[in-house]
Image (tube, rainbow, N blue to C red; front, top):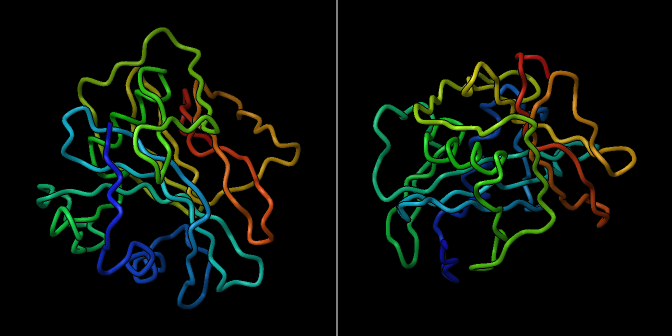
Amino acid sequence: MAVIHRTTLKPTKLELLTAWLPSRPWYGGAGAPEPARAGGFRLDDPDGEVGIEFMVVTDAAVPRPAGYLVPLTYRGAPLDGAEHALIGTAEHGVLGLRWVYDGCHDPVLVAQLLALIDGRVQAQAQSTSDTPDLEVTRSYAGAGLTSPDVTTTAIDDQEGTELPAPQGTTLRLHRVLRPAPDGSPLLPEGATGHVGGTWQLPDGTRARGLFAVLHTSSRS
């Protein structure tokens, strides 16, 4: 299991995101964002080399604060061919210099997200070591989702990010989070799997919605 270190990160994750979010087509603000932590979870890298975090942030810089899903990976060295996905570098108080990436372009994160959808791994608490996050839900209607050749050809649009997935499917990450009206997200037509979770709204209440959906087509 990944160990959560109680230490410093300079610049902080939120400082890195303040500079990076406006470059994304799915970011809805018009000026400098004011991101705040609102939830998320972690996944473990089987090799213990890459930190994997799915962070939810809200942006108070807009009249109606929006929630965004930001998958991140943390590496001790640059990821070859992923310069376009680099969010920034930061000095970790224990691990030293870390390269922080948009995780949708990192094959380790994509592989572990598919493993979570398939039920082969369990979501972990965002800030506590060796603790499952029981608020994260997942499903898969197929018969064994394998990903021997993970691709990270991620395409962003105004709502999220899509990636090709195994067996002719498409993996869509909902970057702009929308709370389910009745608390139970409804899977869209053509969905064969999902990951859902909760986050905190600016008024202090909890919301639940879809984080990622596996489709038989590219429709969201």
